[in-house]
Length: 170
Length: 381
Image 1: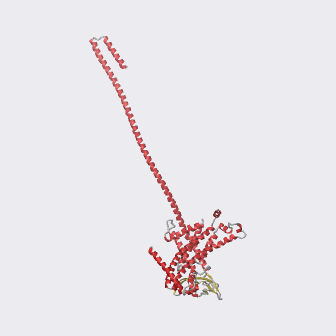
Image 2: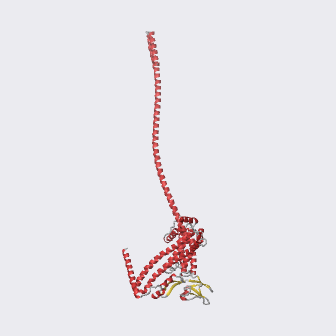
Image 3: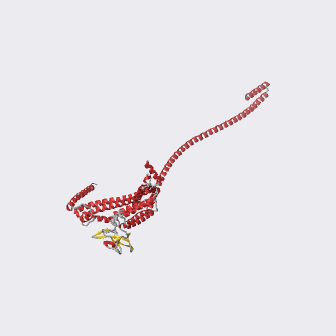
């Protein structure tokens, strides 16, 4: 058989075989494989980008957590210092109030004592006056009874009593 | 490493010395002209016909010859399907025509006659003619066997994914992985860059062409049944493949492609009164598949011829004395192994080249206007 002249029978069988092979492989063979490869490739790409995104987000989250931690520490410090100040305030205020209270009470007591003293003094003075009047009365009566008492002496006593009253008033 | 190197050096020295000595011996014993004519070689080597052996192998046959043992041919008979002018279609086994027998008026034309080696029919009036012959010859059977292997391989790989419910987490290893890798490398490195944007439409055809050629090339290197048929070294096979590419290129070619052929962008006098450029371009439509046909055919054929010629050294040197024969045998085996390994590479390269050229031709036929414009402006710059 000649090398360079194609044989009809072989052409026929080759064409038939090739068409069948092509038909079968183009429908059930290569598209499946290339499709799977394509699918896997897109999946890998998506996964990579997702992982990248997740990593970036994680970095962001870490940063945020750090920030939050710092914030919290700062705020707790602030709160602590403000609480200390507040407590000092409160203590100061309470002390002041207590002092004021004590002072007011002492003032009231003093006033009361003064009033009581004045009252007692008044009563005492009245009693003394009454007593002295009584004494004077008794003395006077005795003198008068002795008969030696002159009008002169009575005047002098009255004068003294008046002077005493003026002195006390002023 | 060192002992191995020494062994190789020793072997090469032996080969060289042996070859030199053998050459002197052969010249002194049997002075003869260095003609390579089949007849003379046959005479000189006492019936061993190298050219005949090579041509028996590379050409088609009606039966699948495996070996000859003590003058008896061990071969697989293949179905002959012929249509005679009087009887219509006839189907019979090729064994009926062996040894010059004739069956129902059919026989194989003897050496030197017209249609040598093919089935001829003898009519009632004694007229010898060639019937319509759709016999499943050795090459046809080889193509069918290789097609089945190809179908099993690729559909098996596709089934591998199906069995795993097309899960994206199913990543093949081993053989399926290798096939997938080959497909991916072809699609990414050859088909996509060459064809352009609608490469997905053409990828199945181009991949089929690649694997078809590759399997046929590899099976052609297997020495005996079910391989050994010189399929891709037969012009009918490569012609069909090239015509398939021609079909894909010209039938799906777009407007831009046909415009570049029929009204190319050249000075008007080159295309107006005498359509010089269109004729050249039209010739290109024929020459492209022709080049594809011849390239694949000639490369495969040459590879087979070289391997067979080297193997024949063993038998050719049989009459040249024992030393010569031993040396030539070692030489032959070494070179044949080398050539076979090289041919495995060539099997891949030729399939790759065919696919690449087909992709480029398809890409040229799918060029869009915009792209063509860009190229032109680039050239003018």
